Image (cartoon, rainbow, N blue to C red):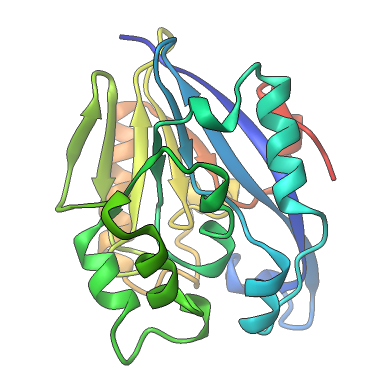
Length: 239
């Protein structure tokens, strides 16, 4: 089974220190990084990877999001000929605030996350990026499906635990005629991080192992926040 994908830009996070992703960047250099969601489809199935941020959760975490993320997400889906009710599966690379802000757009969807990510996110040391995550998980209730390690979700679509950015981080690999495509999540926030481990990935060994696996497999790597993704032929919508 072959999958196609679309990149939906759903907002911009201003004032991000570039040094958090690129080692050696000037510590005072701030950049505006896009926030993306990813629509994957094989025809009968429509899957969303990450749902972006929202203004309220961003403010609670001490950050700003520019753009009406929910409206932009709906516009991007419509441009692809997909309605929110068509989406039956949401996959979260991890549970940071800028990746889980619009799950309510998809009331029929099962939500897949690593069990180790849930455990870490609800623990005492999780930190501000996991603002209100316990409330978020309670809201989803039985829609949450926790998995462990590498799991095939549908034919030609699998999640791979890699744990470099957060202990339960996972990436999504889909089968394409041109070869595998990896929706990386924050283990590869920018294209440069396909060769350089980001400072935002403190678990270096896990990150390097994942990058070696990707190189060996010849995967196309889709980073999570790189402005250059706007030029990708599958990118839809710019706030």
